[in-house]
Image (cartoon, rainbow, N blue to C red; front, side):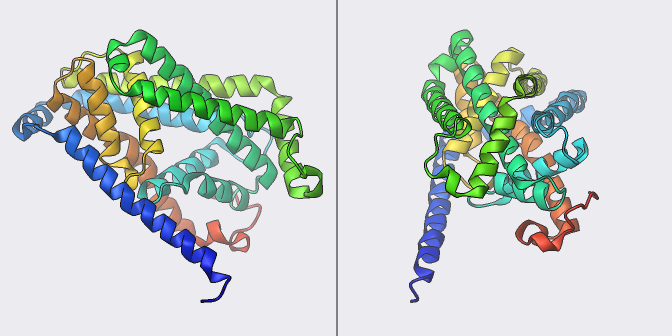
Length: 331
């Protein structure tokens, strides 16, 4: 075998190993979530769910999706990109991530699309995307900490372990961000590309109002998802306040992103939600029904957008810069 092919082979094997481990982990967690479940109770609860509440839940869900895109859009102000384009870019990345056996494609897809299709300069796109994700980590740690303080059910569940993980990510991300902004990265002056990235972060640092606005928008996004979950929970007889529900959904999302699983986090997400809801006093059948319904509401919109976008523009746009004009503005 040629020497140049060995690293690619090792990477391929590593991805397949992650995918295989994800199948095992998802299957095991799905079994634990549904262990001793009475499926007739699950079916009856689903059939008795008020359809008007399902429609009502779509209102805060749509607002949450819009606010999720807004947290990146406010950092991109001044660039030739519209809110609609940011919304489509973000959901395309999230949707393809849902379909990928190795869930590590969201940010690369978003970065390639916003740069190559919508002509946002790469350093600026990269800096704002990383900044948005760092702020999301801050929000995750903040809301999970609030949930542990306010909710006995969250305290009794495995969320404490997830909270520790969130704070570790918070600290590491903050240290890296500070190092980059202060120019403490070794050999940074030798690489013009890295220097442009640092300039992008420095520009963000000089606009604290946008950073605070993005953080606030992110918090509103999660609170709206909590409101969506609260509406669904009411239809299933689950009495969990909206703020606690938001904390549960934040913790479940963090757990799903941290643990290898099959595409869309099937099994992993449901285990996390069912565990925390049952510890909060919910019936297991109702909790499983809620997890199934909430997961569909979260996964389906970005996945549908991703399929529509990739079908319309082709994956070549994400691989080859010459496949789309740098000034393209169509959706």
